Image (cartoon, rainbow, N blue to C red; front, side, top):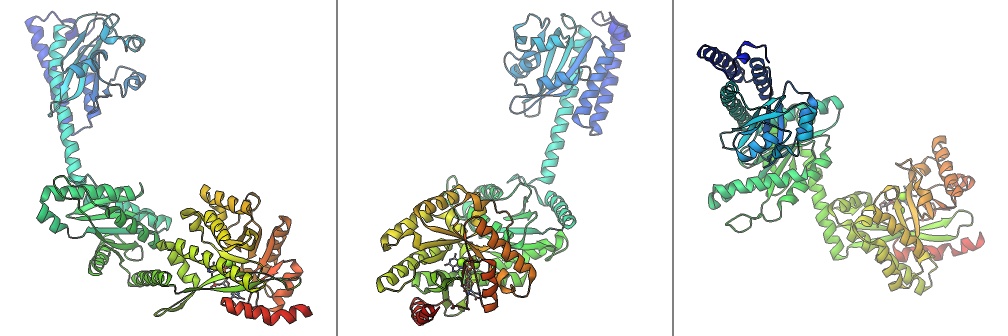
Length: 627
Ligand code: C2E
Ligand code: MG
Ligand code: MG
């Protein structure tokens, strides 16, 4: 049956044969233990074990399957079976009727099946076994230190049969070897966890962080993009630890890690440096986006943390930011500077973020000051509107006016919309601001109507954000009704950003406004985007040729060509084209020649308060009559 000298004696076992057997098993044990001692990967050790067993007993086929915590099997070694066999059982669950191995792991005891063809334990796996010519199988579970079954060691035969005594002695030795190898592997992995991960939060520790951050910085340098290092320290953590105990403190760290992790991208690495200090490296990140991330993290920590046995706890954190490469060329320098920035944040009253660079903090302070002043202005009614006339280029008729927001702060002085609108957009004030403008402009138009001032319509600028955060169409419908205005009297100026937005809310509102009869105008047309497909899809009535094309119209043939193209697009699609910021007669002549419909600018009139516009209208009436 077999050509191997030891195998020939299998089951017969004369005393002389037994000694040789024991010697062969000793050699096998020695070699496998050596592989374990040299920390060879588990798969390699198990593969060696199986090959040596098969060399001693060529009539057996040997396999080792790992069993994970979920009770699923993963083949570790099956050197004499094709890879397709391992692939077929990968991830299969253990169970009371799951072949020899799955059942042995389930029962936590050896399972011996002498005839796979007829044993009910193999019902679900019989076709698979038969396809690979396996007819009998004896499987032994291997226990980990935790008493959980971590693997199975199995011998297969190609014909139905019982297990030979020699094979039993061999398996006894091998089961022990498997156990040693598995436990050693478990230890190695535990050591790795301890060496690279934080025991409390499960986050990477300082060492692994350094490794990943180094890599991120190299990548950033090579691809020439920015990178930010964010250092976060929980405010008053020591008090929490001292007053609530270390178990509560640990729980706070765990929950903090979870909340912070949810705010970051997969490509960012979050780590715990120790104590209550967390650090993150943000890949491909500008200073502005780093600040946004910091805001997001602070917000995520704000809701009270539930703590077993204690009242829910509100947390705040101080954050220091350092940007690569401006604030440091290497990790060490970045960490040091982020630390300085973090202490700056603590000094500024905690619960906030600070940059390392002084200049950035000044910008941040200015933003915060402006934000507070703007809030104050809105609630105190310190904002006002100016109106600028919009004229028909052919005959000078007044077509309407644009409402432009004006703000003069007691300390900051007059602040231009180009400065405060972006701040309002960032801090979430834009919604209230634009809603106020819309209402004030509608009220003014109605007032002019009642006073017999012939202003045919008003244009109002609407921030793209408002379409996302609010229902502009519903607000417009309400205002038109409240002030008795016709929808055609109102034009909403939106930028191309809105048109290209995929947000369905935005599109749906634009459609509703159009159906109502409200005009939509594309402001600053021609700046920024090249895609014009939206002009056909969306209900646009008017294009405003951006002032950057008008300014050098007389001297720059390029600008003239662009202006001409915009006007041609408008004509082709049946849209009115309005030129912004017309200051000279030369510009006016050229625009007229190019076929531009309307114009707005200092040549005709500066933006004026409502009374000023009425005055201006009166003063020009004789001139208009002359024309
Ligand atoms: P915009 O909508 O393109 O407004 C036209 C800007 O050109 C206005 O600046 C206006 O004062 C200015 N302008 C008018 N005629 C001339 C001229 O002949 N020469 C030059 N050089 N400029 C002229 P303003 O008022 O500073 O507004 C700037 C931007 O702020 C506006 O650009 C608009 O995007 C935004 N904005 C103004 N009011 C509001 C508002 O109520 N809500 C929103 N969301 N944005 C507003
Ligand atoms: Mg505008
Ligand atoms: Mg504009």
